[in-house]
Image (cartoon, rainbow, N blue to C red; front, side, top):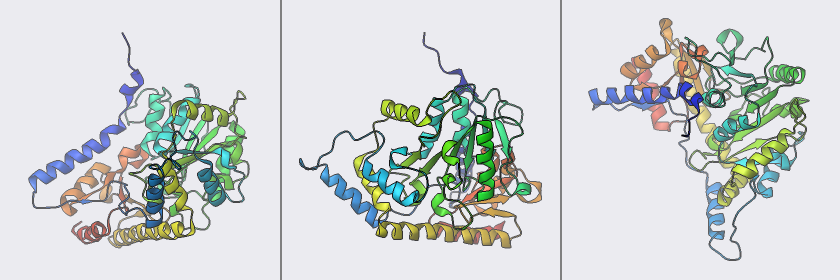
Length: 402
């Protein structure tokens, strides 16, 4: 008889969103006349920019003509998109177009990348952090047993607190795989060049691999914050970079992303990470659809840049308004400058869930309890500024009921 992967039984963070839905549903049933204001989900709400939409329509129409029809595309992505990304996102950086792999979502790539590592590899990650880093480590057998505080015995947690400005401290022990997310989800804070230099130096010394999640790179406004880890000398020998078009251009419903895997990156046993990932992609991935890739290419056109930057500006304006309002109410507020997330400390020593319930019942606002992102998230909640403008407006009014 076939047996299941017993590691799946150790997964726990998936309970977060069902629990949020459960509490919100109970509130709705008891208060049918009160609409809820959802600042929890980090989903894009602005429509696809006209230039990008038109490019996808044109590409779809090409599929209906004999002379322009396309069948299977390259698993790694079409060269026209790889080159557009390289010329725009990696100008003057040590990255070539054939080191860029087009995909259908950073979440998939981050989880799947662990396949090329041995199960014995030690994982280190920011805490609080994006749940997929932990969950994929659990599935791959790298997490060990669950401890009383909800953490995993084999995972090396790097506490990001207000005392260290939410910058993960360097490990005091060896790590093989390091997850870094900058700008960070959920805290909204970003790593400076100095901080990234420390991490690259650590990875070089320990022969570790950094999996650098730059999904929110397009939101960076601070000139001192690197847009790519490859701005740090030597990073192309220790780091893989993940980028997403989900928030950059509203592709949450279309799915579009890419991974940069430098050819200079090798594992301790001499295996090429680039060669291994390329083989994995060619074996398991059929490629991102042609119309979607034409849409991604259009993001890099002058007009596409203008339109997407206007949308990003709107999101950041919403973040600014939320941050300003919450700060004026006496709360400690972080993030919102280089990312669309607001990280708020609960008042009066409330737990994350207690503050969540308070916001739900007093303000009718849905947030995300920080505890769900890891042990160091306790005592915080996350608000998303990606909501529609009228939702943001209603939230600003509702906060007065706090």
